[in-house]
Image (tube, rainbow, N blue to C red; front, top):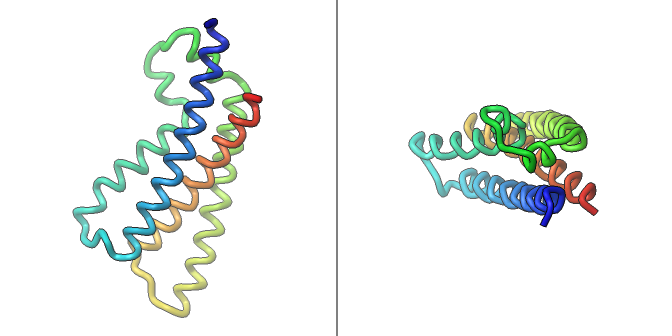
Length: 140
């Protein structure tokens, strides 16, 4: 198997992982808002999860050290463009989620932690789904 085939296979795996991360974020947020994870001690793992998820959307891990030719092929111009597009989708999803939560909060009080979870989860989920969809579409 050549370098290009390896890069394409790893890019597809990264896209599928992005879908799984998005699903995991949604499940985590739904369970937390439904009351299954009360208390501030449950926020630390969630912050780690969203931090690593957000880091996964960037090319930062690939800049820390040289990963070789396959890494360079996986992070080409097209992938960088997909990242920019996914960040835009995440921004608009966070904006929409913030507006919806503000409207709902005007009728019924919502916990500040829940507002943060909803807004961040909406943005990261949209960004992950957009990135994965664009990457899978490009691999066809």
